[in-house]
Image (cartoon, rainbow, N blue to C red):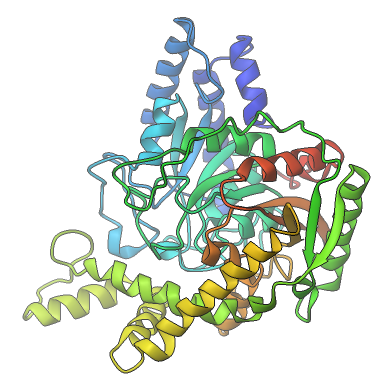
Length: 483
């Protein structure tokens, strides 16, 4: 049963081939057996999962149906979950049990999804490798010496290792798409505002967006259907109708205009990944797509702009963690200043501290105009580049990452080299666009992804292209040895 996709699980449950309770117990046993190798979970919620599975089976027995009813998933451990530790993979929140459910958690629970637990991540979602977690690094199931990508690396590794069919993630600068690429999954970052951020502990509020990680585009459509929708509790949620994301999966690609930015194939891209991207372009051409070279001239400024804006917002968002009301508190503080200093120094890891310092510096009185304001201007230029490009093409295609997964620890002494791994993904966050990564081959036995970008609220178009590609390739069906 662990090899079944979400779509296959929905059919199996509808045809009474197995119950949600049977499936849930099978996967919980598999997690207990295999997860110690990859460290993808922070918290397992066995009792809650079995209770939800029994409730889903009862709902089906009463005539209810639904693609997610009884389907096992897991949540990235920065979605607040009532009564369950919500740690953000940080010592700061190691003892925090959320007093409410995030909107994403409650929506999926209402749809009947069964939550098996909370997955590991980079601390407060800050990282590209899932190495900064207080609970230890997550390992890539394709090669346990390599990273799974980040920050949603726990969700990605768990799905890749067939511990469960799908999981939620969040994407601030590629944190769904990059780990999807490095673990042979399909990962979707929706349009900013499509999925509620309420109850999703913030890293960078103008960039963060929740989304699905699964093995296929069809499964991502199913999970996104349960996650998306306007939320009056979230001031950044957009009141846009939610379409049936599965409705157009089988639409023809004939005449679809695909733009390939010249800037995506500059120095820094592994030539073996470039070859796989070109192979995927040929495959889409066979399906009737028309390829056009385009330009995104301001892409070269994306990384410096992102690494000013994101840390600036993080320094503001994380100021609430001060040892006073909740979270880690130092012992025997001498005074209030000592309480603040030691609680934050002890509670936050090195990468989080680094980004808080960078952000506070960029927002300080003497540097706000020179750094933060300039970065926001570049952000607008990047958005304008995409608006112009989408006047010429329907979607944009390129590599998801410049390199395959690297060895654990290989970039620890050079954080900038890890930041550069997000070079192709951060532009979508800066512009607020939807983006998807899909499996496209292997380099040295490690998975490689191809990224698709679309205009605002065109997630269905991304899912359609990825689904048609997956009907004609088998990269997404391959699983890591031993799992």
